[in-house]
Amino acid sequence: MFLETLYLRFLRHAWYSSQAVAMLFAMSVYLGIGILFHRIFIVNEYDQKIYNKYAQAWDRNPNKKRDLFISAFIAVMPYLLMMALKLVFPRPH
Image (cartoon, rainbow, N blue to C red; front, side, top):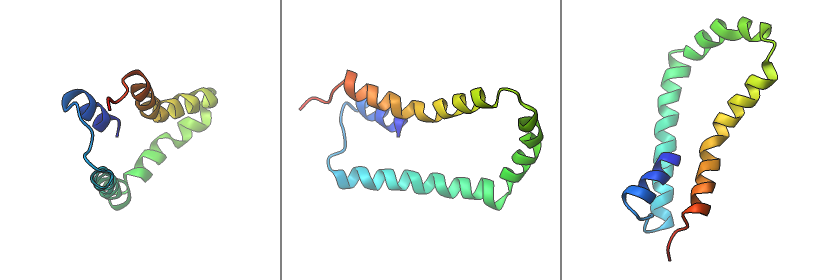
């Protein structure tokens, strides 16, 4: 969604014409990503391979809280940037 926001704001200089079109686009993006991740992680079982590879290293990691905070911050970063984009570059009416 963050990349979509950047594209619409800075390249097209426009937003969606209606809320229904925006919702349809967002749902199609989420559905596509969901299908892709289902194929990669569930069908091919890459999640188990990743877990087995790093589970013991995580148990021995003394910096668990710091690493968890960094992971959470990276996950929240696009949403914070979208909010900042809306505040710094408001949409003209």
